[in-house]
Length: 216
Image (cartoon, rainbow, N blue to C red):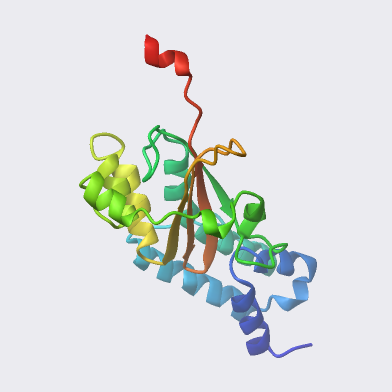
């Protein structure tokens, strides 16, 4: 049996999204010190997000308590991103409003392309830097997140602002790939993030526009 401090370091290394799977498959590796750390991390996340994060565990086993704490933390980070993914929003580089899809890192992921994201990402040499286009052609901020907010300032301002505030509390990377006429691939935006150790990506693909609509 490994010492409790070693098990704690192992859980921290695995992260809130993966460690619960480890705990369920081997309950003996979740001592009380791991549960106490998860509770302290949830309290720290509440300070970071400036909101109360509900966690519905009562008189559970250690594993159930630990998994409930991890689940509450993941849900708190996920909520703002899932909220914007469900909305028709304008994104930098796109002409049409679109909805997104959120991918999450899982225990199966071995690269930075979380949740099977690699099949969605075009070749790196097709990526386009939008900073000059946004600032010079559209008069928006060259920062893609600020431009995203400006593009949706009239509508859906609060959800986009909540998502941006969350992303600024972690690490994120924005990338844009224009439409590829040869393969008939639509334009795509990727917003990869890691907030409080919770990793994922918001993926947006520009919807097709019915050409007939231009003649109505």
